[in-house]
Image 1: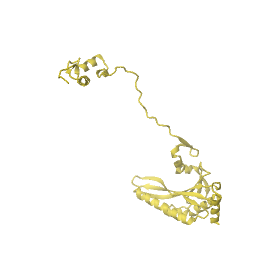
Image 2: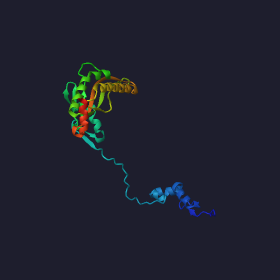
Image 3: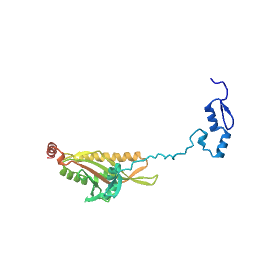
Image 4: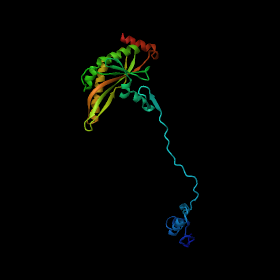
Length: 253
């Protein structure tokens, strides 16, 4: 129990304290004599608080090291693309423009690293008209799409297909134009597929998506539609069982 007597005296200013922690706090913060003595003699400030004056080796700051990103080289574009973005790069218009090889009037085949599993075609209108409506553009290229699908079904018996429509949009408030695309879900095509019904649904879906995009991106409107990309995922006959092939062929006949 404390008797009120001072047992701890500051050797610099002679001020007395009943507790050691109070003395140390005083020497760190309030003792003017202590600070003056330390500054004139060059004493390390850490000694004032009872800390070690040994400088020791300098501490190296810890750095956050990020692992280098894995890149995949595109032989067609001659650029390296992050692996996580490579599939998107293969479907980009910039890549398709360089990879396109003319197959037929208005139909181009896009070179791909997955030729045995994936065939990509780009279908364009050969008319001189500028198509500002999705429906008129798709009706204009309808025969080309039908011919393409029939040829691929003949070769592969069954194919999985999805479409992607590219259009140029304009934002008047910022005087900016940008290319946007709208795609559809995968559909299985065989000899028994009724192309007219599928194509009608395609027109309705892409027209609706284009309208929703213009409504969502307030101020943007479609200037023209310029191409329809057709992605065909191939099913080689060796991967289909005999019963499935027989069903496809009997349905067609």
